[in-house]
Image (cartoon, rainbow, N blue to C red):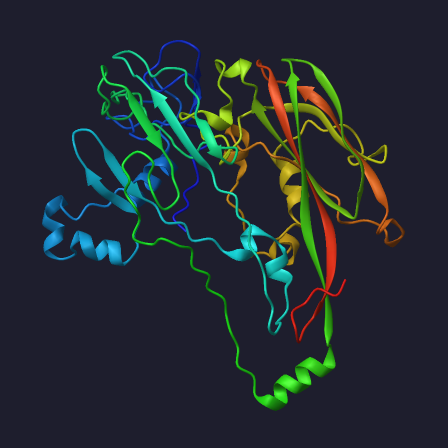
Length: 405
Protein backbone atom coordinates (compact mmCIF):
# COMPACT_ATOMS: atom_id res chain seq x y z
CA UNK A 1 0.00 0.00 0.00
CA UNK A 2 1.34 3.41 -0.91
CA UNK A 3 3.45 1.88 -3.67
CA UNK A 4 4.11 3.95 -6.77
CA UNK A 5 6.06 2.70 -9.79
CA UNK A 6 9.19 4.72 -10.62
CA UNK A 7 9.01 6.39 -14.03
CA UNK A 8 11.02 4.31 -16.49
CA UNK A 9 12.56 7.15 -18.49
CA UNK A 10 13.41 9.64 -15.73
CA UNK A 11 16.80 8.21 -14.75
CA UNK A 12 20.10 9.86 -15.61
CA UNK A 13 23.83 9.18 -15.31
CA UNK A 14 26.70 11.56 -14.63
CA UNK A 15 30.18 11.03 -13.21
CA UNK A 16 30.79 14.78 -12.90
CA UNK A 17 29.47 17.26 -10.34
CA UNK A 18 25.70 17.22 -10.45
CA UNK A 19 22.92 18.64 -8.28
CA UNK A 20 20.95 15.43 -8.87
CA UNK A 21 23.76 13.27 -7.48
CA UNK A 22 26.60 11.21 -8.92
CA UNK A 23 26.52 8.00 -10.93
CA UNK A 24 23.06 6.77 -11.87
CA UNK A 25 20.19 8.78 -10.39
CA UNK A 26 16.39 8.83 -10.58
CA UNK A 27 15.53 11.52 -8.03
CA UNK A 28 14.15 14.41 -10.11
CA UNK A 29 10.50 14.69 -9.12
CA UNK A 30 9.56 18.20 -10.40
CA UNK A 31 8.58 18.37 -14.07
CA UNK A 32 9.84 21.01 -16.48
CA UNK A 33 8.10 24.35 -15.91
CA UNK A 34 6.87 24.57 -19.51
CA UNK A 35 5.88 20.95 -19.76
CA UNK A 36 7.60 19.04 -22.58
CA UNK A 37 9.34 21.22 -25.17
CA UNK A 38 9.75 18.75 -28.03
CA UNK A 39 11.93 21.11 -30.04
CA UNK A 40 14.71 20.89 -27.45
CA UNK A 41 13.93 17.84 -25.33
CA UNK A 42 12.45 14.62 -26.69
CA UNK A 43 12.55 12.81 -23.33
CA UNK A 44 8.87 12.84 -22.38
CA UNK A 45 9.34 11.14 -19.02
CA UNK A 46 11.97 13.44 -17.60
CA UNK A 47 10.71 13.53 -13.98
CA UNK A 48 10.05 10.59 -11.65
CA UNK A 49 6.30 10.63 -11.07
CA UNK A 50 6.45 7.58 -8.80
CA UNK A 51 8.86 9.38 -6.46
CA UNK A 52 6.58 12.42 -6.39
CA UNK A 53 3.58 10.27 -5.42
CA UNK A 54 5.54 8.56 -2.64
CA UNK A 55 6.55 11.98 -1.33
CA UNK A 56 2.88 12.94 -1.25
CA UNK A 57 2.11 9.81 0.78
CA UNK A 58 4.75 10.58 3.42
CA UNK A 59 4.57 14.40 3.62
CA UNK A 60 1.18 15.11 5.19
CA UNK A 61 0.90 18.26 7.28
CA UNK A 62 -2.24 19.42 9.08
CA UNK A 63 -0.83 22.95 9.24
CA UNK A 64 -1.11 23.55 5.48
CA UNK A 65 -4.16 25.60 4.37
CA UNK A 66 -5.41 25.47 8.00
CA UNK A 67 -6.26 21.77 7.66
CA UNK A 68 -5.75 21.35 11.40
CA UNK A 69 -9.13 23.02 11.90
CA UNK A 70 -10.66 19.84 10.47
CA UNK A 71 -8.03 17.12 11.03
CA UNK A 72 -5.63 17.77 13.91
CA UNK A 73 -2.07 16.48 13.75
CA UNK A 74 -2.72 14.33 16.82
CA UNK A 75 -5.59 12.65 14.98
CA UNK A 76 -3.29 11.68 12.11
CA UNK A 77 -1.04 10.03 14.71
CA UNK A 78 -3.94 8.03 16.14
CA UNK A 79 -4.78 6.83 12.63
CA UNK A 80 -1.13 5.79 12.06
CA UNK A 81 -0.78 7.79 8.88
CA UNK A 82 2.65 8.10 7.27
CA UNK A 83 3.54 11.77 7.64
CA UNK A 84 6.09 14.40 8.61
CA UNK A 85 5.68 14.68 12.39
CA UNK A 86 8.10 17.53 13.15
CA UNK A 87 10.12 20.10 11.27
CA UNK A 88 12.61 22.64 12.59
CA UNK A 89 15.67 24.57 11.42
CA UNK A 90 17.94 21.63 12.33
CA UNK A 91 15.88 18.46 11.92
CA UNK A 92 12.93 16.85 10.16
CA UNK A 93 11.27 13.65 11.38
CA UNK A 94 8.96 11.38 9.35
CA UNK A 95 6.93 8.40 10.46
CA UNK A 96 6.35 5.84 7.70
CA UNK A 97 4.11 2.84 8.29
CA UNK A 98 4.30 -0.26 6.10
CA UNK A 99 1.38 -2.61 5.50
CA UNK A 100 2.58 -5.95 4.10
CA UNK A 101 0.48 -8.82 2.85
CA UNK A 102 1.78 -12.18 4.04
CA UNK A 103 1.34 -13.78 0.63
CA UNK A 104 3.63 -11.12 -0.84
CA UNK A 105 6.36 -12.03 1.67
CA UNK A 106 6.27 -15.72 0.82
CA UNK A 107 4.24 -17.92 -1.50
CA UNK A 108 3.54 -20.30 1.42
CA UNK A 109 0.79 -18.11 2.87
CA UNK A 110 -1.14 -18.08 -0.40
CA UNK A 111 -1.12 -21.90 -0.47
CA UNK A 112 -1.62 -22.52 3.26
CA UNK A 113 -5.00 -24.21 4.08
CA UNK A 114 -7.27 -23.56 7.05
CA UNK A 115 -5.46 -24.96 10.09
CA UNK A 116 -6.27 -25.11 13.79
CA UNK A 117 -3.99 -24.24 16.70
CA UNK A 118 -0.90 -23.41 14.66
CA UNK A 119 2.12 -21.54 16.03
CA UNK A 120 4.36 -19.67 13.58
CA UNK A 121 7.47 -17.58 14.04
CA UNK A 122 8.27 -14.69 11.68
CA UNK A 123 11.78 -13.46 10.96
CA UNK A 124 11.61 -10.29 8.84
CA UNK A 125 14.78 -8.49 7.79
CA UNK A 126 14.51 -4.73 7.46
CA UNK A 127 16.74 -2.18 5.73
CA UNK A 128 18.08 0.28 8.29
CA UNK A 129 20.65 2.69 6.88
CA UNK A 130 22.37 5.99 7.52
CA UNK A 131 23.76 8.55 5.04
CA UNK A 132 26.15 11.36 6.01
CA UNK A 133 27.10 14.00 3.46
CA UNK A 134 27.93 17.68 2.94
CA UNK A 135 26.33 19.17 -0.19
CA UNK A 136 27.81 22.12 -2.06
CA UNK A 137 26.28 24.79 -4.26
CA UNK A 138 27.19 22.82 -7.37
CA UNK A 139 26.84 19.13 -6.54
CA UNK A 140 25.65 16.34 -4.31
CA UNK A 141 28.72 14.27 -3.41
CA UNK A 142 29.42 10.64 -4.27
CA UNK A 143 28.45 8.94 -1.02
CA UNK A 144 26.87 5.62 -0.12
CA UNK A 145 24.90 4.60 2.92
CA UNK A 146 26.23 2.62 5.86
CA UNK A 147 23.82 -0.23 6.48
CA UNK A 148 23.06 -1.42 10.01
CA UNK A 149 20.57 -4.03 8.82
CA UNK A 150 19.67 -5.38 5.40
CA UNK A 151 21.41 -4.81 2.06
CA UNK A 152 19.65 -1.80 0.52
CA UNK A 153 19.47 1.92 1.28
CA UNK A 154 15.76 2.90 1.52
CA UNK A 155 16.62 6.63 1.71
CA UNK A 156 16.44 8.81 -1.39
CA UNK A 157 17.85 12.32 -1.48
CA UNK A 158 15.91 14.32 -4.04
CA UNK A 159 17.49 16.49 -6.70
CA UNK A 160 18.62 19.95 -5.60
CA UNK A 161 18.51 21.25 -9.17
CA UNK A 162 15.64 23.69 -9.79
CA UNK A 163 13.58 22.70 -12.85
CA UNK A 164 13.84 24.81 -15.98
CA UNK A 165 11.54 25.32 -18.94
CA UNK A 166 12.75 22.11 -20.60
CA UNK A 167 14.42 20.08 -17.81
CA UNK A 168 13.11 18.39 -14.69
CA UNK A 169 14.63 18.79 -11.24
CA UNK A 170 13.73 19.30 -7.60
CA UNK A 171 13.94 21.98 -4.92
CA UNK A 172 17.13 23.42 -3.44
CA UNK A 173 16.33 22.52 0.18
CA UNK A 174 19.77 21.63 1.63
CA UNK A 175 22.16 24.23 3.03
CA UNK A 176 25.36 24.12 0.98
CA UNK A 177 27.52 24.78 4.04
CA UNK A 178 26.13 22.33 6.62
CA UNK A 179 26.65 18.55 6.90
CA UNK A 180 23.52 16.43 6.60
CA UNK A 181 22.79 13.08 8.26
CA UNK A 182 19.80 10.95 7.26
CA UNK A 183 18.81 7.65 8.86
CA UNK A 184 16.05 5.06 8.70
CA UNK A 185 15.27 3.38 12.01
CA UNK A 186 12.63 0.98 13.30
CA UNK A 187 10.32 2.34 16.04
CA UNK A 188 12.87 4.74 17.60
CA UNK A 189 15.21 7.20 15.86
CA UNK A 190 18.92 7.08 16.72
CA UNK A 191 19.47 10.79 16.09
CA UNK A 192 16.35 12.46 17.45
CA UNK A 193 15.21 9.82 19.96
CA UNK A 194 11.70 10.15 18.48
CA UNK A 195 9.51 7.09 18.97
CA UNK A 196 6.62 6.21 16.70
CA UNK A 197 3.04 6.01 17.89
CA UNK A 198 2.93 2.30 17.05
CA UNK A 199 5.74 0.57 18.95
CA UNK A 200 5.19 -3.02 17.78
CA UNK A 201 4.00 -4.89 14.72
CA UNK A 202 0.43 -6.00 14.29
CA UNK A 203 -0.65 -9.19 12.52
CA UNK A 204 -4.11 -9.42 10.98
CA UNK A 205 -5.33 -12.85 9.94
CA UNK A 206 -8.82 -14.18 9.09
CA UNK A 207 -10.31 -16.42 11.79
CA UNK A 208 -13.29 -18.69 11.13
CA UNK A 209 -15.58 -20.22 13.74
CA UNK A 210 -16.96 -23.51 12.41
CA UNK A 211 -20.25 -25.14 13.19
CA UNK A 212 -19.16 -28.17 15.33
CA UNK A 213 -20.46 -30.64 12.75
CA UNK A 214 -18.81 -28.78 9.89
CA UNK A 215 -15.52 -28.63 11.81
CA UNK A 216 -15.61 -32.36 12.53
CA UNK A 217 -16.31 -33.11 8.89
CA UNK A 218 -13.51 -30.79 7.69
CA UNK A 219 -10.94 -32.37 10.02
CA UNK A 220 -11.99 -35.94 9.23
CA UNK A 221 -11.98 -35.57 5.45
CA UNK A 222 -8.30 -34.62 5.29
CA UNK A 223 -6.51 -34.70 8.66
CA UNK A 224 -3.28 -33.72 6.92
CA UNK A 225 -2.64 -31.59 3.86
CA UNK A 226 0.40 -31.26 1.64
CA UNK A 227 1.30 -27.66 0.83
CA UNK A 228 3.40 -26.93 -2.23
CA UNK A 229 4.96 -23.47 -2.32
CA UNK A 230 7.84 -21.67 -4.00
CA UNK A 231 11.17 -20.73 -2.46
CA UNK A 232 14.03 -18.66 -3.92
CA UNK A 233 17.76 -19.24 -4.34
CA UNK A 234 19.73 -16.03 -4.97
CA UNK A 235 23.28 -15.45 -6.17
CA UNK A 236 25.27 -12.53 -7.60
CA UNK A 237 28.06 -12.29 -10.17
CA UNK A 238 30.16 -9.16 -10.53
CA UNK A 239 32.61 -7.66 -12.98
CA UNK A 240 31.17 -8.23 -16.47
CA UNK A 241 32.84 -5.53 -18.56
CA UNK A 242 31.25 -3.52 -21.37
CA UNK A 243 30.86 -5.64 -24.51
CA UNK A 244 32.03 -8.85 -22.81
CA UNK A 245 30.24 -12.17 -23.10
CA UNK A 246 29.56 -14.08 -19.88
CA UNK A 247 28.96 -17.70 -18.94
CA UNK A 248 28.10 -18.17 -15.27
CA UNK A 249 27.21 -21.33 -13.36
CA UNK A 250 24.52 -20.30 -10.87
CA UNK A 251 24.11 -23.63 -9.08
CA UNK A 252 25.26 -27.24 -9.47
CA UNK A 253 21.88 -28.67 -8.61
CA UNK A 254 18.38 -27.49 -7.62
CA UNK A 255 15.25 -29.66 -7.64
CA UNK A 256 11.89 -28.67 -9.15
CA UNK A 257 13.02 -25.40 -10.75
CA UNK A 258 10.06 -23.17 -11.61
CA UNK A 259 11.70 -20.05 -13.05
CA UNK A 260 14.99 -18.19 -13.47
CA UNK A 261 15.27 -14.40 -13.22
CA UNK A 262 18.36 -12.32 -14.09
CA UNK A 263 18.49 -8.70 -12.91
CA UNK A 264 21.42 -6.49 -14.07
CA UNK A 265 22.93 -3.57 -12.13
CA UNK A 266 25.88 -1.25 -12.62
CA UNK A 267 28.98 -2.29 -10.69
CA UNK A 268 30.31 0.01 -7.98
CA UNK A 269 33.30 0.99 -10.15
CA UNK A 270 30.93 2.09 -12.95
CA UNK A 271 28.85 4.08 -10.46
CA UNK A 272 31.56 6.45 -9.16
CA UNK A 273 32.57 3.97 -6.44
CA UNK A 274 29.02 3.68 -5.05
CA UNK A 275 27.18 0.38 -4.83
CA UNK A 276 23.84 1.20 -6.58
CA UNK A 277 21.97 -0.57 -3.75
CA UNK A 278 23.50 1.86 -1.26
CA UNK A 279 23.28 5.04 -3.35
CA UNK A 280 20.85 7.66 -1.97
CA UNK A 281 20.24 8.96 -5.52
CA UNK A 282 19.32 5.68 -7.25
CA UNK A 283 16.15 3.58 -7.16
CA UNK A 284 18.22 0.36 -7.29
CA UNK A 285 16.63 -2.28 -5.14
CA UNK A 286 13.13 -1.10 -6.02
CA UNK A 287 14.15 -1.09 -9.70
CA UNK A 288 17.22 -2.34 -11.46
CA UNK A 289 19.53 -0.47 -13.81
CA UNK A 290 18.69 -0.08 -17.54
CA UNK A 291 21.20 -2.66 -18.80
CA UNK A 292 20.60 -4.37 -22.19
CA UNK A 293 21.77 -7.98 -22.55
CA UNK A 294 22.20 -9.71 -25.90
CA UNK A 295 22.61 -13.35 -26.97
CA UNK A 296 20.91 -14.33 -23.71
CA UNK A 297 20.06 -17.90 -22.76
CA UNK A 298 19.50 -20.14 -19.75
CA UNK A 299 20.85 -23.67 -19.55
CA UNK A 300 19.27 -26.26 -17.25
CA UNK A 301 21.61 -29.26 -16.92
CA UNK A 302 23.35 -28.08 -20.12
CA UNK A 303 20.04 -28.05 -22.04
CA UNK A 304 19.26 -24.65 -23.58
CA UNK A 305 16.02 -23.01 -22.43
CA UNK A 306 15.45 -20.93 -25.58
CA UNK A 307 15.84 -22.56 -29.00
CA UNK A 308 18.51 -19.99 -29.80
CA UNK A 309 20.23 -17.21 -27.89
CA UNK A 310 17.76 -14.35 -27.48
CA UNK A 311 18.09 -10.68 -28.31
CA UNK A 312 15.80 -10.44 -25.31
CA UNK A 313 13.05 -7.87 -25.94
CA UNK A 314 9.62 -7.10 -24.51
CA UNK A 315 7.98 -9.76 -26.65
CA UNK A 316 10.21 -12.45 -25.15
CA UNK A 317 9.62 -11.07 -21.65
CA UNK A 318 5.82 -10.96 -21.97
CA UNK A 319 5.73 -14.44 -23.56
CA UNK A 320 7.67 -15.97 -20.67
CA UNK A 321 5.63 -14.07 -18.08
CA UNK A 322 2.25 -14.94 -19.62
CA UNK A 323 1.74 -18.16 -17.66
CA UNK A 324 3.26 -16.86 -14.41
CA UNK A 325 0.71 -15.50 -11.91
CA UNK A 326 -1.64 -14.36 -14.70
CA UNK A 327 -5.37 -14.93 -14.86
CA UNK A 328 -5.90 -17.88 -17.21
CA UNK A 329 -2.34 -17.50 -18.43
CA UNK A 330 -3.21 -14.20 -20.12
CA UNK A 331 -5.22 -16.10 -22.77
CA UNK A 332 -8.61 -14.53 -22.07
CA UNK A 333 -9.29 -11.20 -23.76
CA UNK A 334 -10.09 -8.55 -21.16
CA UNK A 335 -8.12 -10.22 -18.37
CA UNK A 336 -4.63 -8.89 -17.82
CA UNK A 337 -2.25 -7.94 -15.06
CA UNK A 338 1.19 -6.45 -14.51
CA UNK A 339 2.84 -3.09 -14.04
CA UNK A 340 5.49 -3.41 -16.76
CA UNK A 341 4.54 -2.58 -20.32
CA UNK A 342 6.63 -2.13 -23.45
CA UNK A 343 7.65 1.43 -22.53
CA UNK A 344 8.73 0.47 -19.00
CA UNK A 345 10.67 -2.57 -20.21
CA UNK A 346 12.56 -0.78 -22.95
CA UNK A 347 13.55 2.20 -20.79
CA UNK A 348 14.35 0.70 -17.38
CA UNK A 349 12.67 -2.50 -16.22
CA UNK A 350 14.66 -4.97 -18.30
CA UNK A 351 14.03 -8.18 -16.37
CA UNK A 352 15.38 -11.35 -18.02
CA UNK A 353 12.95 -14.09 -17.08
CA UNK A 354 12.52 -17.72 -18.05
CA UNK A 355 9.52 -19.81 -16.98
CA UNK A 356 10.78 -23.35 -16.33
CA UNK A 357 7.63 -24.72 -14.68
CA UNK A 358 6.45 -26.48 -17.84
CA UNK A 359 8.53 -29.63 -17.37
CA UNK A 360 7.90 -33.31 -18.06
CA UNK A 361 6.65 -35.51 -15.19
CA UNK A 362 9.89 -37.50 -15.42
CA UNK A 363 11.83 -34.32 -14.55
CA UNK A 364 9.96 -33.65 -11.31
CA UNK A 365 12.20 -34.02 -8.27
CA UNK A 366 15.31 -34.18 -10.46
CA UNK A 367 18.17 -31.91 -9.46
CA UNK A 368 19.36 -29.71 -12.35
CA UNK A 369 22.22 -27.26 -12.71
CA UNK A 370 21.53 -23.66 -13.71
CA UNK A 371 23.76 -21.69 -16.07
CA UNK A 372 23.30 -18.34 -17.82
CA UNK A 373 25.06 -17.01 -20.91
CA UNK A 374 24.86 -13.68 -22.70
CA UNK A 375 26.63 -10.45 -23.62
CA UNK A 376 26.80 -7.16 -21.75
CA UNK A 377 25.54 -4.72 -24.41
CA UNK A 378 25.88 -1.64 -22.18
CA UNK A 379 28.83 0.78 -22.10
CA UNK A 380 29.61 0.09 -18.42
CA UNK A 381 30.79 -2.74 -16.19
CA UNK A 382 27.83 -4.56 -14.61
CA UNK A 383 26.84 -7.06 -11.93
CA UNK A 384 24.15 -9.70 -12.39
CA UNK A 385 21.72 -10.73 -9.68
CA UNK A 386 20.20 -14.19 -10.22
CA UNK A 387 17.05 -15.61 -8.64
CA UNK A 388 16.09 -19.26 -9.09
CA UNK A 389 12.56 -20.06 -7.96
CA UNK A 390 12.00 -23.71 -7.02
CA UNK A 391 9.15 -25.73 -5.54
CA UNK A 392 9.14 -27.03 -1.98
CA UNK A 393 6.49 -28.89 0.00
CA UNK A 394 5.49 -29.73 3.55
CA UNK A 395 2.72 -31.78 5.12
CA UNK A 396 0.68 -30.12 7.88
CA UNK A 397 -1.56 -31.64 10.54
CA UNK A 398 -4.77 -29.63 10.09
CA UNK A 399 -5.96 -30.10 13.69
CA UNK A 400 -2.75 -29.08 15.48
CA UNK A 401 -1.05 -26.96 12.81
CA UNK A 402 2.15 -28.95 13.34
CA UNK A 403 4.49 -29.80 10.47
CA UNK A 404 4.38 -33.54 9.86
CA UNK A 405 6.88 -33.79 7.02
